[in-house]
Amino acid sequence: MWAVYLLAISVTIIAYRLSLNRNKHLPPGPKPHFLLGNLFDVPTDAAWKVYAEWGKKYGDIIYFSVMQKSVIVINSASIAHDLLDKRSAIYSCRPHVPMAGDVIGWNWALPLVPYGEKFRRHRKYLSQYFAKQCLPNYYPIQLKEARRLLNDLLDDPDNYRQHIERLAGAVIMEIVYGHEVKSFDDEFLQVASKGGRTIAAAGAVGAHIVDLIPPLRFIPDWLPGAGFKRLPPGTREDLIAMRDVPFNHVKEKMKAGTARPSYTSTLLEETKFQDEEGIRDTAGNSYSAGFDTTLSALMTAVIALVLDPVIQARAQAELDSVIGRNRLPEFSDRDKLPFIHCIINETFRWGATTPVGVPHRLTQDDTYNGYFLPAGTTIIANAWAMLHDPTMFPDPERFDPDRWLVGEGRTPPPLDPRGPAFGTCPGKDIAENTIWIVIVSMLYCFKLTPGLDENGKEIHIDNKHTEHSVRHPKPFKCAIKPRRPNTATLIRDAQEYQ
Ligand code: HEM
Image (cartoon, rainbow, N blue to C red):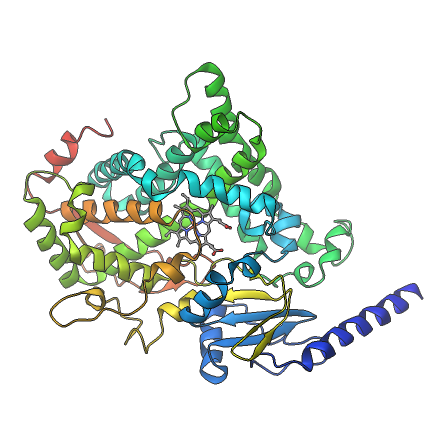
């Protein structure tokens, strides 16, 4: 009987809330059904592409609701800038995501921390350590790891993806924990990678009933309907290990006086060990947020270059003209390599690594262009749509670095791809620097071509990305061969990683 009363009360509250919003001028969107809203319209696969399609009908700002939850999708960079940047005080909060946060246990990570004192403190640590003026401090790590990668590719080119994966983890591991990852089997790299993968159990937001009815997170695991709570064995433990194991290792090394300077050791000292939890959580978050994304962007650049030998050859000609034939690339070469800059820009645009970034939550009622935007709305910035907008990027599915060329009457697109690609990511410059040094090093030393089958025929490359919250090119075979007779000597003689 009580259940019937409770249901009736919930239905009345939902209906009342809906009626309140219905009278306001919400942005356009698919027609909702009574009580359920657009539950059955919400795309579960490559939602960003569906939202872009909806945009053709409804415009650049779209409203829909699921149960009583309001969602706004922004398909345009200028609207995202007006709301998320200019009104950041009310658009920076994060929605409660019970499956990822409570059930799996990611609540400690910044993308799930509500806006407030803790959020601001954690962001401050990150922006302090990853600030522009600190970036040159990390060049030696990025250069060393790029050179180690060249060596790995020379020895074992077939496993190129694993070597790039090691590099993506190694750069962040050393910056954040001062730990040097020399091989793919490294204990800490494996612990961290395993923990990072636990997010997969969350699926798409809304894929689990608990994301729609949050109190369900309290029901016992054994109850029928609590299937979402039965995670693959070890999931929660792996996640905690990712956050705690490397952090505790740094503390032990600090005690022994053998810690190398890192995000963790520097901030622990600066804060006099008064906020261990904050430093532990932001360090773990940096690893989980920076590893897979960097890997994805690197693999995106590699597939694009393998598929287009002309672009690859143009980039190599530019590198040769600046660097010559007798040394490896350095960060100081950067300003002299405009075409490489275009390749990096196009990688961020074409790959749209994090197609919808991290959802935000509006904390106050707001109005925009005559529309009412209700407090509590989840805000999704559709970076994929912004970066694939055909009015700004003709033939958007084509990898075309020339879009970004300047001079000789050319005007590049009026949108820096870093804006939508990274949102307010605190690690964006570190990521870009890693990607730059790896791509120039690989291009300078190697020719990248599609792999060959046993008959010596090129293996077809399926030029597609997996449509997950971090997009990756689908696996492809690639042949990596030294470009010149002295390439191996240059790589072997590099001192940085010896
Ligand atoms: C290609 C590489 C990367 C991409 C595309 C990327 C993208 C993003 C995006 C879209 C967000 C959400 C920002 C927002 O809510 O507005 C984010 C958050 C974050 N990123 Fe990155 N990121 C990358 C690399 C990195 C690296 C290398 C680090 C660390 C060194 C890092 C650390 C973080 C952290 C700690 C957050 C959480 C911040 C928050 O929730 O406020 N990211 N990233």
